[in-house]
Length: 149
Image (cartoon, rainbow, N blue to C red):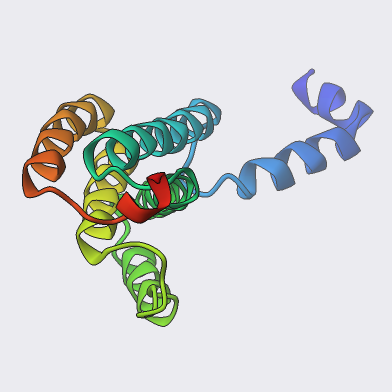
């Protein structure tokens, strides 16, 4: 009986198989979770950059983008050594140049936030973000101070 049911519409089974093959090691819920983690990293980074490092709006947006990219990258390669090595290679090729509009300290903070959120520890990333805000204010980051005036 099952053979007859599959024979009735073999084309739909082929499309489902092709679609399932292109999910990689993800389930459907993992895709949604990765999207939430990426957005969470961007939001945390924007808050830390704006209130902790006191960056301008444009610099805070750039910092949020970096954190989101780090989170997405970590989420994609989680538990897969070959993909992780590929991510490192891409990061080395695309690393921010010295002409980047972000201070290295801020970029390092965005990396930490992105790594935390991308690895599935968004709550830990939120706690670290609070700590980073305090630390950036304590250090007295001068990035963006001229842009505020």
